[in-house]
Image (cartoon, rainbow, N blue to C red; front, side, top):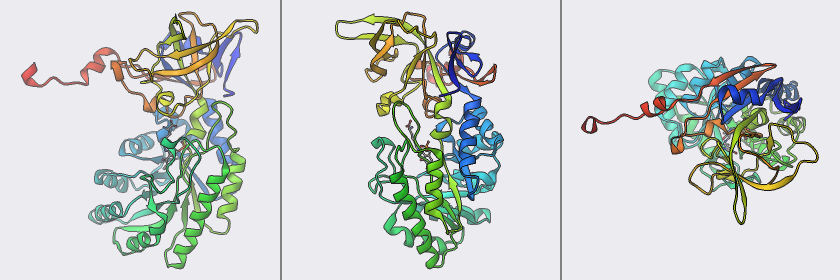
Length: 420
Ligand code: LLP
Protein backbone atom coordinates (compact mmCIF):
# COMPACT_ATOMS: atom_id res chain seq x y z
CA UNK A 1 0.00 0.00 0.00
CA UNK A 2 2.67 2.46 -1.10
CA UNK A 3 0.25 5.35 -1.60
CA UNK A 4 -0.47 5.33 2.14
CA UNK A 5 2.54 6.52 4.13
CA UNK A 6 3.34 8.47 7.27
CA UNK A 7 4.41 12.04 6.67
CA UNK A 8 5.22 14.36 9.56
CA UNK A 9 3.78 11.87 12.02
CA UNK A 10 0.43 11.37 10.30
CA UNK A 11 -0.83 8.76 7.84
CA UNK A 12 -1.43 10.23 4.40
CA UNK A 13 -3.04 9.09 1.18
CA UNK A 14 -0.61 10.51 -1.36
CA UNK A 15 -0.11 14.09 -0.04
CA UNK A 16 -3.46 14.28 1.78
CA UNK A 17 -3.57 13.85 5.53
CA UNK A 18 -6.13 11.23 6.53
CA UNK A 19 -6.82 13.21 9.71
CA UNK A 20 -7.83 16.11 7.48
CA UNK A 21 -10.17 13.85 5.47
CA UNK A 22 -11.74 12.54 8.68
CA UNK A 23 -12.24 16.06 10.02
CA UNK A 24 -13.79 17.27 6.78
CA UNK A 25 -16.02 14.30 5.95
CA UNK A 26 -16.49 12.55 9.28
CA UNK A 27 -15.97 8.86 9.95
CA UNK A 28 -16.34 6.12 8.94
CA UNK A 29 -15.22 6.96 5.42
CA UNK A 30 -13.46 5.10 2.63
CA UNK A 31 -10.48 6.87 1.17
CA UNK A 32 -8.92 5.83 -2.15
CA UNK A 33 -5.60 6.93 -3.61
CA UNK A 34 -6.02 7.78 -7.28
CA UNK A 35 -2.33 7.16 -7.94
CA UNK A 36 -2.62 3.62 -6.60
CA UNK A 37 -5.63 2.90 -8.81
CA UNK A 38 -3.70 4.13 -11.82
CA UNK A 39 -0.58 2.22 -10.84
CA UNK A 40 -2.55 -0.98 -10.43
CA UNK A 41 -4.03 -0.66 -13.90
CA UNK A 42 -0.78 0.43 -15.54
CA UNK A 43 1.10 -2.49 -14.02
CA UNK A 44 -1.45 -4.88 -15.47
CA UNK A 45 -1.50 -3.19 -18.86
CA UNK A 46 2.31 -3.13 -19.02
CA UNK A 47 2.63 -6.81 -18.11
CA UNK A 48 0.24 -7.73 -20.94
CA UNK A 49 1.45 -5.15 -23.46
CA UNK A 50 2.80 -7.78 -25.85
CA UNK A 51 -0.31 -9.97 -25.76
CA UNK A 52 -3.68 -9.58 -27.46
CA UNK A 53 -5.46 -8.86 -24.19
CA UNK A 54 -8.45 -6.80 -23.10
CA UNK A 55 -8.42 -5.83 -19.42
CA UNK A 56 -12.02 -5.69 -18.26
CA UNK A 57 -12.03 -4.34 -14.70
CA UNK A 58 -14.51 -6.30 -12.55
CA UNK A 59 -16.76 -3.53 -11.26
CA UNK A 60 -18.04 -5.67 -8.43
CA UNK A 61 -14.81 -4.93 -6.54
CA UNK A 62 -15.50 -1.19 -6.42
CA UNK A 63 -18.05 0.41 -8.70
CA UNK A 64 -17.91 4.03 -7.62
CA UNK A 65 -18.15 6.12 -10.81
CA UNK A 66 -14.98 8.01 -9.90
CA UNK A 67 -13.02 4.78 -9.44
CA UNK A 68 -14.34 3.25 -12.67
CA UNK A 69 -13.76 6.57 -14.42
CA UNK A 70 -10.13 6.67 -13.27
CA UNK A 71 -9.55 3.23 -14.78
CA UNK A 72 -11.63 3.89 -17.90
CA UNK A 73 -9.52 6.93 -18.74
CA UNK A 74 -6.48 4.68 -18.76
CA UNK A 75 -8.15 2.35 -21.23
CA UNK A 76 -9.77 -0.25 -19.00
CA UNK A 77 -12.81 -2.18 -20.16
CA UNK A 78 -15.36 -3.53 -17.72
CA UNK A 79 -16.67 -6.84 -16.47
CA UNK A 80 -20.20 -6.29 -15.18
CA UNK A 81 -22.67 -8.64 -13.54
CA UNK A 82 -25.86 -6.61 -13.53
CA UNK A 83 -27.60 -3.94 -15.55
CA UNK A 84 -26.73 -1.56 -12.73
CA UNK A 85 -23.03 -2.24 -13.11
CA UNK A 86 -23.35 -1.96 -16.89
CA UNK A 87 -24.95 1.45 -16.48
CA UNK A 88 -22.13 2.48 -14.14
CA UNK A 89 -19.49 1.33 -16.64
CA UNK A 90 -21.14 3.25 -19.48
CA UNK A 91 -21.66 6.33 -17.31
CA UNK A 92 -17.99 6.23 -16.30
CA UNK A 93 -16.96 6.28 -19.94
CA UNK A 94 -16.19 2.64 -20.69
CA UNK A 95 -17.06 2.09 -24.36
CA UNK A 96 -19.64 -0.69 -24.89
CA UNK A 97 -17.22 -2.63 -27.08
CA UNK A 98 -15.01 -3.10 -24.00
CA UNK A 99 -17.77 -4.45 -21.74
CA UNK A 100 -18.27 -8.10 -20.83
CA UNK A 101 -21.45 -9.12 -19.00
CA UNK A 102 -20.90 -12.07 -16.63
CA UNK A 103 -23.11 -13.67 -14.01
CA UNK A 104 -25.06 -16.81 -13.38
CA UNK A 105 -28.55 -15.32 -13.52
CA UNK A 106 -29.10 -12.50 -15.97
CA UNK A 107 -32.71 -11.44 -16.35
CA UNK A 108 -34.20 -11.03 -19.79
CA UNK A 109 -34.44 -7.29 -19.15
CA UNK A 110 -30.68 -7.27 -18.47
CA UNK A 111 -30.01 -9.24 -21.65
CA UNK A 112 -32.06 -6.75 -23.61
CA UNK A 113 -30.19 -3.82 -22.08
CA UNK A 114 -26.83 -5.42 -22.84
CA UNK A 115 -27.74 -6.19 -26.44
CA UNK A 116 -29.19 -2.73 -26.97
CA UNK A 117 -25.99 -1.16 -25.63
CA UNK A 118 -23.99 -3.31 -28.05
CA UNK A 119 -21.48 -4.70 -25.57
CA UNK A 120 -18.52 -6.91 -26.51
CA UNK A 121 -19.78 -10.19 -25.11
CA UNK A 122 -22.17 -11.93 -22.76
CA UNK A 123 -20.80 -14.81 -20.72
CA UNK A 124 -23.49 -17.45 -20.47
CA UNK A 125 -23.55 -20.02 -17.68
CA UNK A 126 -26.34 -22.49 -18.49
CA UNK A 127 -28.37 -23.94 -21.35
CA UNK A 128 -31.64 -22.31 -20.25
CA UNK A 129 -29.84 -18.97 -20.09
CA UNK A 130 -28.48 -19.55 -23.61
CA UNK A 131 -31.99 -20.26 -24.93
CA UNK A 132 -33.41 -17.20 -23.18
CA UNK A 133 -30.66 -15.00 -24.60
CA UNK A 134 -31.23 -16.31 -28.10
CA UNK A 135 -34.94 -15.51 -27.82
CA UNK A 136 -34.27 -11.98 -26.55
CA UNK A 137 -31.76 -11.38 -29.35
CA UNK A 138 -34.13 -12.67 -32.04
CA UNK A 139 -36.81 -10.30 -30.73
CA UNK A 140 -34.38 -7.41 -31.05
CA UNK A 141 -33.21 -8.57 -34.48
CA UNK A 142 -29.59 -9.01 -33.37
CA UNK A 143 -27.20 -11.88 -32.78
CA UNK A 144 -25.60 -11.98 -29.33
CA UNK A 145 -21.81 -12.50 -29.13
CA UNK A 146 -21.42 -15.15 -26.46
CA UNK A 147 -18.74 -16.93 -24.47
CA UNK A 148 -19.88 -19.98 -22.54
CA UNK A 149 -18.49 -20.07 -19.04
CA UNK A 150 -17.35 -23.59 -18.29
CA UNK A 151 -16.72 -25.06 -14.87
CA UNK A 152 -13.31 -26.73 -14.96
CA UNK A 153 -13.69 -28.41 -11.55
CA UNK A 154 -10.53 -26.93 -10.10
CA UNK A 155 -9.93 -26.03 -6.48
CA UNK A 156 -8.73 -22.42 -6.38
CA UNK A 157 -7.27 -22.89 -2.90
CA UNK A 158 -9.04 -19.83 -1.54
CA UNK A 159 -11.79 -19.20 1.04
CA UNK A 160 -14.67 -21.57 0.29
CA UNK A 161 -17.16 -18.72 -0.09
CA UNK A 162 -15.19 -17.17 -2.96
CA UNK A 163 -14.11 -20.36 -4.75
CA UNK A 164 -16.20 -20.78 -7.90
CA UNK A 165 -14.50 -23.41 -10.03
CA UNK A 166 -15.50 -26.70 -8.36
CA UNK A 167 -18.16 -28.88 -9.91
CA UNK A 168 -20.39 -28.45 -6.85
CA UNK A 169 -20.36 -24.66 -7.29
CA UNK A 170 -23.26 -22.98 -9.07
CA UNK A 171 -21.03 -21.41 -11.71
CA UNK A 172 -20.55 -22.31 -15.35
CA UNK A 173 -21.50 -25.27 -17.48
CA UNK A 174 -20.08 -28.64 -16.44
CA UNK A 175 -16.88 -29.15 -18.36
CA UNK A 176 -18.11 -32.49 -19.68
CA UNK A 177 -21.23 -30.86 -21.11
CA UNK A 178 -19.38 -28.07 -22.84
CA UNK A 179 -19.40 -29.59 -26.34
CA UNK A 180 -23.14 -30.18 -26.21
CA UNK A 181 -23.66 -26.63 -25.04
CA UNK A 182 -21.70 -25.24 -28.00
CA UNK A 183 -23.65 -27.54 -30.33
CA UNK A 184 -26.87 -26.06 -28.94
CA UNK A 185 -25.47 -22.55 -29.37
CA UNK A 186 -24.74 -23.29 -33.01
CA UNK A 187 -28.39 -24.28 -33.55
CA UNK A 188 -29.86 -21.22 -31.87
CA UNK A 189 -30.59 -18.28 -34.19
CA UNK A 190 -29.92 -15.46 -31.71
CA UNK A 191 -26.47 -16.34 -30.38
CA UNK A 192 -23.01 -16.69 -31.87
CA UNK A 193 -20.65 -18.62 -29.59
CA UNK A 194 -17.33 -16.90 -30.11
CA UNK A 195 -15.54 -17.63 -26.87
CA UNK A 196 -14.79 -19.79 -23.87
CA UNK A 197 -14.82 -18.30 -20.35
CA UNK A 198 -13.49 -19.56 -17.01
CA UNK A 199 -13.21 -17.98 -13.58
CA UNK A 200 -12.31 -20.22 -10.67
CA UNK A 201 -12.34 -17.90 -7.69
CA UNK A 202 -11.02 -14.80 -6.03
CA UNK A 203 -7.96 -13.95 -3.91
CA UNK A 204 -5.84 -16.75 -5.44
CA UNK A 205 -2.33 -16.72 -4.05
CA UNK A 206 -0.79 -19.39 -6.23
CA UNK A 207 -0.41 -19.82 -9.98
CA UNK A 208 -1.06 -23.57 -10.00
CA UNK A 209 -4.88 -23.47 -10.06
CA UNK A 210 -4.80 -20.74 -12.72
CA UNK A 211 -2.46 -22.91 -14.79
CA UNK A 212 -4.75 -25.93 -14.54
CA UNK A 213 -7.83 -23.89 -15.45
CA UNK A 214 -6.21 -21.98 -18.32
CA UNK A 215 -4.83 -25.18 -19.83
CA UNK A 216 -8.22 -26.85 -19.69
CA UNK A 217 -9.87 -23.84 -21.26
CA UNK A 218 -7.23 -23.59 -24.00
CA UNK A 219 -7.62 -27.28 -24.76
CA UNK A 220 -11.38 -26.81 -24.99
CA UNK A 221 -10.90 -24.03 -27.55
CA UNK A 222 -9.04 -26.49 -29.76
CA UNK A 223 -11.61 -29.22 -29.28
CA UNK A 224 -14.44 -26.85 -30.14
CA UNK A 225 -12.63 -25.63 -33.23
CA UNK A 226 -12.31 -29.28 -34.22
CA UNK A 227 -16.08 -29.52 -33.83
CA UNK A 228 -16.43 -26.66 -36.31
CA UNK A 229 -17.03 -23.72 -33.96
CA UNK A 230 -15.31 -20.44 -34.75
CA UNK A 231 -13.90 -19.69 -31.31
CA UNK A 232 -11.55 -16.74 -31.24
CA UNK A 233 -11.92 -15.37 -27.69
CA UNK A 234 -10.79 -16.76 -24.38
CA UNK A 235 -11.93 -15.08 -21.16
CA UNK A 236 -9.75 -16.12 -18.24
CA UNK A 237 -11.71 -14.29 -15.52
CA UNK A 238 -10.17 -12.54 -12.56
CA UNK A 239 -8.98 -13.75 -9.19
CA UNK A 240 -5.37 -12.64 -8.81
CA UNK A 241 -4.83 -12.17 -5.08
CA UNK A 242 -3.28 -9.27 -3.19
CA UNK A 243 -1.27 -8.95 0.01
CA UNK A 244 -3.47 -8.37 3.03
CA UNK A 245 -1.04 -9.82 5.55
CA UNK A 246 1.77 -12.14 4.58
CA UNK A 247 0.34 -13.76 1.48
CA UNK A 248 2.70 -14.14 -1.46
CA UNK A 249 0.43 -13.83 -4.50
CA UNK A 250 1.98 -14.26 -7.94
CA UNK A 251 3.36 -11.07 -9.46
CA UNK A 252 1.43 -9.59 -12.36
CA UNK A 253 4.46 -10.40 -14.53
CA UNK A 254 4.36 -14.09 -13.58
CA UNK A 255 0.62 -14.16 -14.10
CA UNK A 256 1.07 -12.58 -17.54
CA UNK A 257 3.78 -15.10 -18.42
CA UNK A 258 1.41 -17.91 -17.45
CA UNK A 259 -1.34 -16.49 -19.67
CA UNK A 260 1.12 -16.28 -22.56
CA UNK A 261 2.37 -19.81 -21.98
CA UNK A 262 -1.06 -21.43 -21.71
CA UNK A 263 -2.69 -19.59 -24.61
CA UNK A 264 0.23 -19.45 -27.03
CA UNK A 265 -0.61 -20.38 -30.58
CA UNK A 266 -4.39 -20.17 -30.13
CA UNK A 267 -4.62 -16.75 -31.76
CA UNK A 268 -7.44 -15.83 -29.39
CA UNK A 269 -8.33 -12.41 -28.08
CA UNK A 270 -7.75 -12.88 -24.35
CA UNK A 271 -10.11 -11.20 -21.89
CA UNK A 272 -9.11 -10.69 -18.24
CA UNK A 273 -11.44 -9.60 -15.47
CA UNK A 274 -9.27 -8.40 -12.57
CA UNK A 275 -11.05 -6.68 -9.71
CA UNK A 276 -9.23 -6.87 -6.39
CA UNK A 277 -5.75 -6.79 -7.94
CA UNK A 278 -6.46 -3.34 -9.40
CA UNK A 279 -8.17 -1.64 -6.47
CA UNK A 280 -7.76 -3.67 -3.27
CA UNK A 281 -4.67 -1.96 -1.94
CA UNK A 282 -5.71 1.46 -3.20
CA UNK A 283 -8.16 2.14 -0.38
CA UNK A 284 -8.51 2.32 3.39
CA UNK A 285 -11.49 2.59 5.68
CA UNK A 286 -10.98 5.41 8.17
CA UNK A 287 -12.64 5.01 11.52
CA UNK A 288 -12.54 6.77 14.89
CA UNK A 289 -12.17 5.10 18.26
CA UNK A 290 -15.29 5.62 20.37
CA UNK A 291 -14.34 3.77 23.52
CA UNK A 292 -11.70 1.48 24.89
CA UNK A 293 -13.38 -1.10 27.08
CA UNK A 294 -11.31 -3.19 29.43
CA UNK A 295 -13.15 -6.43 30.23
CA UNK A 296 -11.94 -9.19 32.49
CA UNK A 297 -10.89 -11.36 29.58
CA UNK A 298 -10.39 -9.05 26.62
CA UNK A 299 -9.85 -5.43 25.87
CA UNK A 300 -12.03 -4.00 23.14
CA UNK A 301 -11.45 -1.02 20.93
CA UNK A 302 -14.93 0.07 19.91
CA UNK A 303 -14.77 2.05 16.66
CA UNK A 304 -17.40 3.92 14.68
CA UNK A 305 -17.11 1.67 11.61
CA UNK A 306 -18.97 -1.62 11.64
CA UNK A 307 -19.69 -4.76 9.69
CA UNK A 308 -22.25 -2.87 7.60
CA UNK A 309 -19.41 -0.67 6.31
CA UNK A 310 -16.83 -3.44 5.74
CA UNK A 311 -18.23 -6.95 5.91
CA UNK A 312 -15.17 -8.98 4.84
CA UNK A 313 -13.92 -9.86 8.33
CA UNK A 314 -17.43 -11.00 9.37
CA UNK A 315 -18.19 -12.88 6.19
CA UNK A 316 -14.87 -14.49 5.29
CA UNK A 317 -12.86 -14.18 8.51
CA UNK A 318 -10.73 -11.85 6.41
CA UNK A 319 -7.64 -10.23 7.98
CA UNK A 320 -7.13 -6.52 7.33
CA UNK A 321 -4.17 -4.53 8.60
CA UNK A 322 -4.98 -1.68 11.00
CA UNK A 323 -2.77 1.38 11.46
CA UNK A 324 -3.14 4.34 13.79
CA UNK A 325 -3.43 7.54 11.75
CA UNK A 326 -1.18 9.33 14.27
CA UNK A 327 2.15 7.55 13.93
CA UNK A 328 3.15 5.74 17.09
CA UNK A 329 6.66 6.14 18.44
CA UNK A 330 9.01 3.13 18.66
CA UNK A 331 8.83 3.04 22.48
CA UNK A 332 4.99 3.20 22.69
CA UNK A 333 3.25 0.44 24.58
CA UNK A 334 1.75 -2.15 22.20
CA UNK A 335 -0.94 -4.49 23.52
CA UNK A 336 -3.50 -6.87 22.03
CA UNK A 337 -7.02 -5.53 21.43
CA UNK A 338 -10.16 -6.78 19.75
CA UNK A 339 -11.26 -4.09 17.32
CA UNK A 340 -15.04 -4.14 17.09
CA UNK A 341 -17.89 -2.05 15.70
CA UNK A 342 -21.11 -0.89 17.35
CA UNK A 343 -23.46 -3.35 15.58
CA UNK A 344 -25.32 -5.80 17.79
CA UNK A 345 -23.61 -8.96 16.57
CA UNK A 346 -20.51 -10.72 17.80
CA UNK A 347 -19.52 -11.06 14.13
CA UNK A 348 -19.08 -7.29 14.04
CA UNK A 349 -15.37 -7.69 14.72
CA UNK A 350 -12.57 -6.29 12.56
CA UNK A 351 -9.65 -7.87 14.38
CA UNK A 352 -9.06 -10.26 17.27
CA UNK A 353 -6.20 -9.90 19.74
CA UNK A 354 -4.46 -7.46 17.43
CA UNK A 355 -1.30 -5.83 18.78
CA UNK A 356 -1.90 -2.07 18.70
CA UNK A 357 -0.29 0.97 20.24
CA UNK A 358 -2.76 1.55 23.08
CA UNK A 359 -5.55 3.62 21.48
CA UNK A 360 -7.45 6.46 23.10
CA UNK A 361 -11.02 7.56 22.41
CA UNK A 362 -10.99 9.98 19.50
CA UNK A 363 -7.98 8.38 17.83
CA UNK A 364 -8.26 7.58 14.14
CA UNK A 365 -7.50 4.13 12.75
CA UNK A 366 -7.08 3.12 9.12
CA UNK A 367 -8.31 -0.33 8.14
CA UNK A 368 -6.08 -1.27 5.23
CA UNK A 369 -6.58 -3.04 1.88
CA UNK A 370 -10.20 -1.96 1.82
CA UNK A 371 -10.39 -0.73 -1.76
CA UNK A 372 -11.97 -3.93 -3.06
CA UNK A 373 -15.24 -5.43 -1.81
CA UNK A 374 -15.52 -2.76 0.87
CA UNK A 375 -17.87 0.10 -0.02
CA UNK A 376 -19.68 -2.00 -2.63
CA UNK A 377 -20.74 -4.51 0.01
CA UNK A 378 -21.76 -1.86 2.53
CA UNK A 379 -25.32 -1.62 3.76
CA UNK A 380 -27.40 0.48 6.12
CA UNK A 381 -27.86 -2.35 8.63
CA UNK A 382 -28.82 -0.99 12.05
CA UNK A 383 -29.97 2.13 10.12
CA UNK A 384 -26.43 3.37 9.89
CA UNK A 385 -25.98 5.90 7.08
CA UNK A 386 -24.33 4.36 4.03
CA UNK A 387 -20.58 4.91 4.34
CA UNK A 388 -19.19 7.77 2.21
CA UNK A 389 -16.19 7.59 -0.12
CA UNK A 390 -13.38 10.01 -0.91
CA UNK A 391 -10.87 9.99 -3.77
CA UNK A 392 -7.46 11.57 -3.43
CA UNK A 393 -5.35 13.02 -6.23
CA UNK A 394 -1.96 14.33 -5.18
CA UNK A 395 -2.76 16.96 -2.53
CA UNK A 396 -6.49 17.24 -3.30
CA UNK A 397 -9.43 15.13 -2.31
CA UNK A 398 -13.04 14.95 -3.41
CA UNK A 399 -16.08 13.34 -1.87
CA UNK A 400 -17.14 10.79 -4.46
CA UNK A 401 -20.11 9.53 -2.47
CA UNK A 402 -21.54 11.71 0.28
CA UNK A 403 -22.92 10.30 3.48
CA UNK A 404 -26.72 10.07 3.30
CA UNK A 405 -28.27 12.04 6.10
CA UNK A 406 -30.95 10.49 8.28
CA UNK A 407 -33.78 12.28 6.50
CA UNK A 408 -32.62 10.85 3.15
CA UNK A 409 -32.24 7.42 4.66
CA UNK A 410 -35.71 7.40 6.19
CA UNK A 411 -37.22 8.86 3.01
CA UNK A 412 -36.32 5.63 1.21
CA UNK A 413 -39.16 3.96 3.10
CA UNK A 414 -42.78 4.70 2.24
CA UNK A 415 -45.58 4.39 4.75
CA UNK A 416 -48.73 2.83 3.22
CA UNK A 417 -51.92 4.94 3.23
CA UNK A 418 -53.55 2.83 5.95
CA UNK A 419 -50.78 3.77 8.38
CA UNK A 420 -50.51 7.42 7.40
N1 LLP B 1 -14.88 -12.34 -12.89
C1 LLP B 1 -15.87 -13.05 -12.32
C2 LLP B 1 -16.75 -13.86 -13.15
C3 LLP B 1 -16.03 -13.01 -10.93
O1 LLP B 1 -17.00 -13.73 -10.35
C4 LLP B 1 -15.16 -12.21 -10.13
C5 LLP B 1 -15.31 -12.13 -8.68
C6 LLP B 1 -14.16 -11.47 -10.79
C7 LLP B 1 -14.04 -11.57 -12.18
C8 LLP B 1 -13.20 -10.58 -10.07
O2 LLP B 1 -12.43 -11.31 -9.18
P1 LLP B 1 -11.16 -10.61 -8.46
O3 LLP B 1 -10.16 -10.29 -9.51
O4 LLP B 1 -11.65 -9.41 -7.78
O5 LLP B 1 -10.71 -11.65 -7.52
N2 LLP B 1 -16.55 -10.38 -1.93
C9 LLP B 1 -15.42 -11.29 -1.96
C10 LLP B 1 -14.92 -11.53 -3.37
C11 LLP B 1 -15.98 -12.03 -4.32
C12 LLP B 1 -15.48 -12.24 -5.74
C13 LLP B 1 -16.60 -12.58 -6.67
N3 LLP B 1 -16.25 -12.71 -8.05
C14 LLP B 1 -14.33 -10.76 -1.04
O6 LLP B 1 -14.52 -9.73 -0.41
O7 LLP B 1 -13.28 -11.38 -0.93
